[in-house]
Length: 123
Image 1 (cartoon, rainbow, N blue to C red):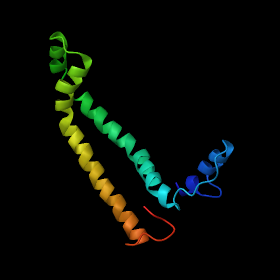
Image 2 (image 1 turned 45 degrees about the vertical axis):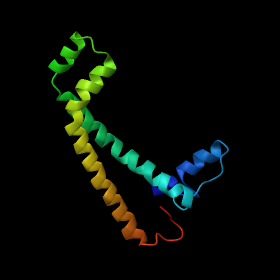
Image 3 (image 1 turned 30 degrees about the vertical axis):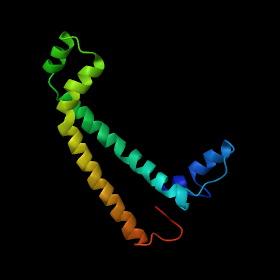
């Protein structure tokens, strides 16, 4: 990520200058460091959360959804009243994993930059 976001030779800044946007200090700017870190974290964890939710969806029994379909439930009603309640344990697991990782991310930033955060990097 440091190579991609490097303010002088990074790929992100190269692409921005190609479309006429001036170079950015993604990790050195007070206003851009937190959104940049959030984007990196989302990029890193989206595949894992997708796999967890797909695994949870694949283990759901088909009978309750078929019964709701026979009873005339719409797609939204089937999702909200049948699928989502059965998927809550998987969603809870995903939420706990994300919360633990979010605390780990804070720990990494706190350990590398100290309690003040430094003057060149604000998050």
